[in-house]
Each structure stands twice: as structure tokens, then as C-alpha cells.
Figure 1 (tube, rainbow, N blue to C red):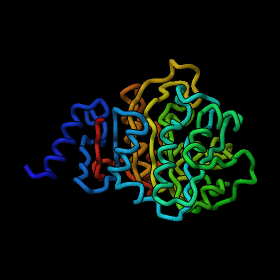
Figure 2 (figure 1 turned 90 degrees about the vertical axis):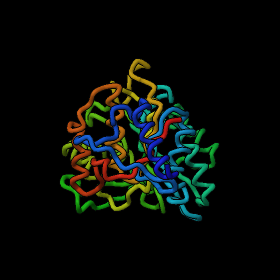
Figure 3 (figure 1 turned 180 degrees about the vertical axis):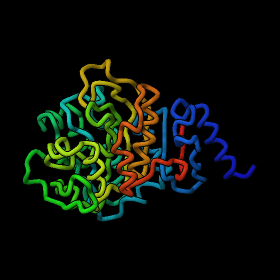
Figure 4 (figure 1 turned 135 degrees about the horizontal axis):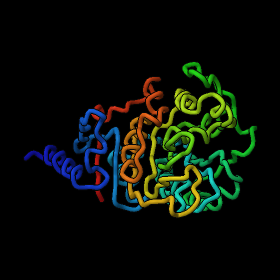
Length: 314
């Protein structure tokens, strides 16, 4: 058997054996299995299970072609995790800080001139930055935490392709970056049904009330039409909040997901992540309607069979 064919066969074997990929979780509605990325060929979507957040990140970024595919020497990089809540990492309300630290180190090793991390938090910002573990992890890794608690850090941007949200105030760290990377956590959300990559954009805007007052699902899709799109979406599914999201009430809301999804296609990243979430709690992708709305706006695809996918079990 040729090496390339062996690699494909091995990955398809992983598809049937790993919990992450059992039952064609990454298949389309019609059951079509995505194309497996060949050896040395950058994937469009990497799905990894079975390791620590750092181990899974390293495998995924390797499958995607390495951080050098996205970050060049001298570039200013902004990373946008979810840090919205005054919760410890074990509560799965915020992105895992170890994952963000690994990404920062990678960006700096690739020659980034700076790496900035921020979120427009829902709870009191200093408590969120501290208790999430994010501030210490970011600073220890060589990154800088940016403020986002005041309107002065945001600038108005027009969204001509949007249906409902025709403009939004976007954080300067996004607008001034050469590259930004979107790093949400996968979790339940009472209003948006699911919080993944696209929902994480609500932390780059100042006035979230606009979203809730003008059809939340459509506005989440609308903000995806922003010209300054993330170079990469990295979904933290190491721990997942399966109920009472987005903040959670207790550890009873949390399950060990042990997975990570990475893609240049934000619609595909959320589609694959929500399919995975269904192993823990059933959610109809059609009810997370901002995903289909974003696809209709030309942002990405829900049809994973169109993508080259790397499926990795650690």
C-alpha cells in the first residue's frame, strides 16, 4: 500500500474507533464523509481528541500546516478567547488558558512582534481576567492583556453586507492587528443555543444590546461579514458546558470533552463542534440558525465533505 493511501486508511480507521469521530460525527447531513488530508497537505479542518489542551493544539496546528502558515515575522497578532465570566477554568465558561498560552508561544516563535489578548467581558473585567487564569497564562507566555471595559477602545465599522446589523463598534486590537485568531470554548448558550466561534465575536463588539434587540441569530451571522476575519478558529472542547450556558451554575454543568477543532472556515469549525457536542447533549444544528445564516452570507460551509480533514486520536 502506498504511504499516502496508508495514511488515509489509518485516519479513516480512527474515524470509526475514536469517540470523537464515532458514527461519522464529522459527516454532512447526507452522510458524506469529508476528504482526509494527505501527508504533508495542510488540512482545512483538524479534529483532535485524547490529550491535554496543549497536546491537542500542537497536533492540530501541525495538521493545518504550522503556525507559520498564519503568522509572519514582524506581524502584530491578536488572540480573542472567551474570558467573559468570573469563573475558574474547571467551570468551562471560558477558554482554557493553557491552550491560549501555547498559541502565544507559537506566534512569538514564528516572529510575531507582539501578541495581544482581550475580551469584552460580561462579568467585572478584572475578576474575569484573573479568575479565569487567563491573565497569568498570557503574561507568563509573553503576551499582553488589553483593556476592553471602556467604549474608547472600540471604533465604528460599517457592515454593508449585513442584513440587520449595519454597523458595530469593534475593538481596536482586532482592527489594528495584522492577524487575529479566534479561540472560543464550546458550550451551551440559552439565547444563541450554542456558543462557539461565531458567537465569540460578541466579545469583539462594544454594544451587545444591538444583537439582542435585532434578532440575535441574524446579528451573530451579520458580524461574520466583517472584512477583518480571523485567520484561524480554534475551538476548545477540552471541557464543555452542556447546560446552563453561557455562565453555568455548578460542575454538574460540565463534562470532559477532551477534544479540539481547528479550521480556517468558521462555519465548518462551528458545524463540526456542534456535531461533537451532540454526543453529550442533543442540539439541532438547524436551531443554531446563525450557522446557516453565515453560510448563506458566503462566510463558510456546513458541508464538511467539501473539506480536507485531519482526524487525530492521541
